Image (cartoon, rainbow, N blue to C red):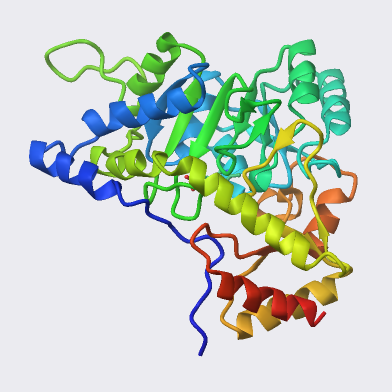
Amino acid sequence: MNKKVWLSPPHMGGGEQKYIQEAFDTNWIAPVGINITEFERGIEKYLKGKKKVVALSSGTAAIHLALVLLKVQQGDEVLCQSFTFSATANSITYVGATPVFIDSESETWNMCPVLLEKAINERMEAGKKPKAIIAVHLYGMPYNVEKIKAIGKKYEIPIIEDAASALGSMVNKQQCGTFGDYGILSFNGNKIITTSGGGALICKDDKTKDKAIFLATQARDEAPHYQHSHIGYNYRMSNVLAGIGRGQLEVLEERVKARRRIFNFYKKTLKHTRFQFLEEPVGYTSNRWLTCVLTDSYSIREKIRVSLSHQNIECRPLWKPMHLQPVFKNCLSYKNGISEELFEKGLCLPSGSNITEEELNRIVGVLKDF
Ligand SMILES: *Cc1c(COP(=O)(O)O)cnc(C)c1O
């Protein structure tokens, strides 16, 4: 059997264990410590000082906290990109609100601005003005930040920017994660850099950051005893894991370059085939977290997927849109057929920054047979 090729495995940089050792040496084996503050400072610097960052236990926790901070409540509606990973939409239900799903545009595969505005108008006519918009930079490709931002501003609806898979992506040189009222990142094991599990909330200033930390650490009032006037959460990142994050930040730029190289390799070697790739709109830079290809049909996609699995190569159909998920079957959705077509014909190819040339050649060998 050939050695397994994973879709997007962790890729350590070498510096991680030094920071973990530091946590052990100083006995800060807790959700407090230098690694956390330094990891946050490192991301803030990477985001060019535009925002403040709170390290959390997951990206999902970050979306939940953003909704809490925006005071989204029971009975509210939140507009959510349908073509995404379930974590984006699940968090909406944690606060008792209901997602309204918005389909994609073909340029970025992300939230369609036209359908977004249509949904806002119709929900407002129904007397249900949406409380927030969650747009996603899926697979690292930025969503149409200019148009979505303008719509949010026009209707005064705050935007949560799901940049879980888009650390290192940019629009006109501005980092993804800094466009929304809140941004969220994920450091899950399969993301471009990882802390094994973890995430971050990106917020506008120190005051908001303090509020987020307060809620993420059980919302304790100032008192010698434990006193609470708010519902809190246990969402802070561990200082041990933040040590992994510090080491990973040191190689983030290399990781972005490697993923982009992998995308270009696939594109170049498959140039004379019928596979289609998602191109970057002018001014847009994707970190190319996962390289995705579109095939001619569902049946060809499935044949390729099965062939790759037989070769011990992990691959995955593109996300099944949330409006097709059984768990969200009763939710309202605004559709145009784009995400359904992507789901039918699309495949994510192995894109880990530690993939070898031999493995890449094995993969394109299988693809070229089609
Ligand atoms: C990974 C991911 C999340 C969730 O992040 P976790 O850290 O795994 O909770 C949310 N949204 C998108 C688009 C993701 O890719």
